[in-house]
Image (tube, rainbow, N blue to C red; front, top):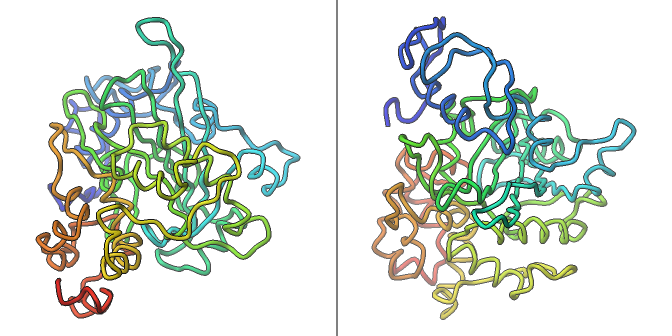
Length: 380
């Protein structure tokens, strides 16, 4: 991708034909096409402050994705916080979950989900959509103590990312993305590592899998990311410990299970909850293993200590490319044999291979070797 996938500097904007706005990276114009295409159920026209990304016409009324976070939550069934309601009470009422995501971005995080009416199908049957948001907290990546503290206190948000499952969009296109800045305004790009901002929705699919359909201006074959409580860090504050949040975590994962997850993600949730993710009160297992990795102590160690916390979240989701072909990065971690042939060290030491895995990648071959349990290192 041009400029290593990073958004170039933005200067003065004029009402020129699409892609020709002075100083405006074309990926930003494409992000606006995406937002104007994805919209939301029963979208109504609103005033926008940018030229039409398809025609170059001056700003005006148009149907587009929600312009701010509050409007996004209202559109997708996420309740607003009542003025007299404390943050703790609001989180309990809405089932929000708070943790530090050391397995992805290295930020504090608040996760909340809801359901919404997504219209009807061809037979008139009502369609139910699912929406989740994650607000990232912190002033620096991988600042564990402060980022988790800011998340528990609900202050110093960095940005908010929204994901929706909308069956009305058709097979392959059901999962779409939205991003909002720290003030709650819609963003065409987002910075999720120290390297710089990347365009929406492509930046989301670095971890959620799938690709971008340039013709339809929509994400394709993307997926929700279920939460594995074993690979994130939890607060010791009453009400926000892992034990305290087990059922809200389960509920969020049960909603994800209703979306088009990959087979590997479904296997994860099945093993994590012993097949009972929809049963209230079911607690997550402290360990789980795919069948292919559950044959020897060495394989279990490698999966539990390296693959699960450092690779699994994204690689379990990255199943297909935009044409529907299975990706090599999805197969790499399916079995010990596929991992042996993956050239793992070369992958994790490439600066731009995994832009959203900066918190977990390790670019020192010696450290990589030391992170592999000794019983397995001889086979790497």
